[in-house]
Image 1 (cartoon, rainbow, N blue to C red):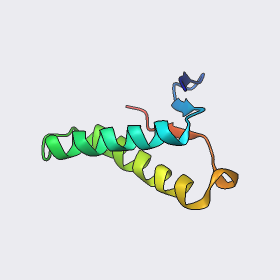
Image 2: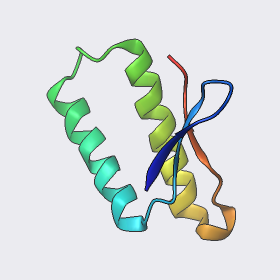
Image 3: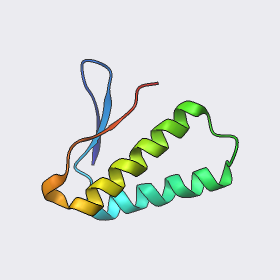
Length: 73
């Protein structure tokens, strides 16, 4: 797994295994639960975006997989 920053300043996470994706999602879930009400709005958007992309990837499988991009801050 690696995190890439393109020439426009956008970050993306590439080459994640299914296990790494689940671990990252679980970590974000625990972080959100522990910091309920104290998450910065930009972080909230990034977490929701990741969760949506995660659900899309796991629902449609590898053939529908696209590069996951985190929103810019």
